[in-house]
Every structure is written in C-alpha cells, then in structure tokens.
Length: 343
Ligand code: SF4
Image (cartoon, rainbow, N blue to C red; front, side, top):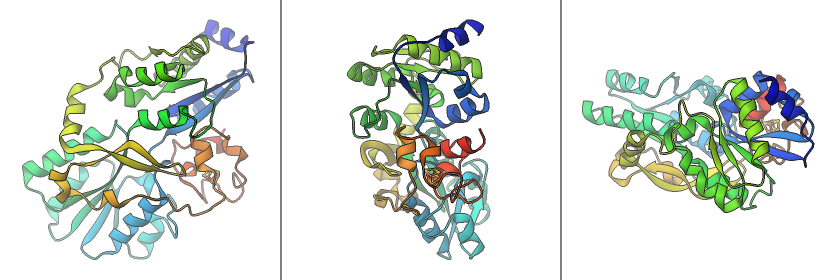
C-alpha cells in the first residue's frame, strides 16, 4: 500500500478527473478519507450509481398518489422515505394518512400481501442490475404461491447506457477514467464495459470496496489514462461474463426500456420494465416519463454527472442538509451530497 500511495502522491502528469460510478464506492471513498490522500491533480467525482439519487421526483409523487388510494399500501426501503417529491416526501405523506410501510427486503412484501389479501401491496422497485434479480425472484415466488395482490412501481436502471450518454458529451463532464461499479459488475461482468472503453478511449477499472482496493484501482486508472481498456481488480467477486443465472432470471421478467434519470431526462435503453406478459404486476411504471424538481436550484444533475462538487451547489449545507434535504443526493447514505456533509 505504501508504494501505491507514493505513486499517487508523486503523480506529476496532467490533471485527471476520475469518476466512481457506484454509490457504495462513494460512501467508502469518503469513509476512508481517500480524497485527502490524493494530490490536487487527481480529482475524484461521483457518478450516477446511487439508485435513490437518480430517481425522479415524479416517481415519489406517483408513489404518494398510489398510497392515498384506500385499497393500496406502498412498501419501500427506508432511504426512499425522505426523498423530496414535488410537494412532500413519502414520510411526510405518511403522517398525512398515505399508507406506507418500510421493509428491509423486497421479499418481505410476500408475507404482507399473503396475510392481507384485502389490500394491494405496491413495492417501490428502485435499483440497478444488482437489485433486479431480487425483483425477479420476488415475482417468481408470488406466482408460485398464487399471490396476486402485489405490484411493482419500477424505477430500474442499467449502467452502460448512462455512462455512454456521459462519455458521448451529452453531459460534457470530461471524465478521464471510471471506477466501474463493483456490485453491478458482479451481475453484468466486466465485459459490459469493454465496448464503452474501446469506443471512447477511456479506461474502466473494476474495484472492490476496501480502502486499499479502491486506492489500487485509482492507481491503475492513472496508469491506464488514455487507453480504452477494462481491468478487473475485483476478481474475487467479478468475472468477465458476470452472473449468467441472475441475468437469465431478470430477462425472464423484465425487458429493456427508456428511463428517466434525475435532472438528465430520458436516456434511451437505460432502464428495465416488466414484460407485457407480467403487466398485471405493474403499477404504471411505463407512464413515468418526466422529472419535476422540488427546488429548481438543486444541482443534483450536475453533481451526478461530475460537473460540480456538492459544495459548489448554492444550497449545500445551508438550505440543503441531511436534516432538510432538497434533493435525493442529500438523503441517501450513498449520495454524494450526504457524504460530502460528513467529510
Ligand atoms: Fe441537490 Fe442538496 Fe445536493 Fe444541492 S446539496 S445538489 S440541493 S441534494
């Protein structure tokens, strides 16, 4: 590790902007104080890999509308509760009578729906390639058990199209290398990023989540600058092909679709929705097509694409704090703004 640190701290090449795509990497980079170990010429920025952060405001509004209908109960992970909708968050809506339940696993909805057939249980199915297999498993179990009062409101996204969108200049973010999303790569395999690396001449390094693993991957990105290559520095979990079984399970229930990303608009082919044959389990996901930011001064889109640091947002730490979040990036523990507040 001493050698890696010496190499990075002695770097005297051109300034580099490196992006960690995965929200868990963002949290670990900050927890380990990694930005403080790098010279000013190596800048780390966060990407669009926190599922809560990239969820559009309209999605929260739609969950609230659904939870107000007497036959429905909205079920969600805890970190979605405080994300601002255009008028209020799910947590605030719950205080006003909206039916919302928090769970720790999507599979918990099976028990809830089985024990209460009078209501329809709607899961806030956000996530990336990593989480989609769990939703596929949930549907498989629901079908096996004959549970019909479950719906998914999906906001499922896939990584390569949004990275392609950024590299193609739509976001003008000038990234010199990517720490590829380790959890996503477990499912997709490192191969999923080979085409992007070759097309844009940018290196991708798959990294683990320990501080030393992240620093090693950053050093590899510095060495690979200008080269369109993928290197896997997380071989204990990631293969080139990925988890074929999980991908087959996802493909059975979901199909590619365009998706709306917070502040970035619709990116073609960057999402997944339930296949037509399973639309009885869908709560209207295909209708989510726009973004309505609660606070127009919120700069989540620029933060999520690496154009600015959270501290450059005019609301950061003043109007927008972890206690009074104005955007999703300040809510999630994987959010760039949240993490910047504590480091
Ligand atoms: Fe949005 Fe708050 Fe982050 Fe600014 S500090 S970009 S308002 S979440």
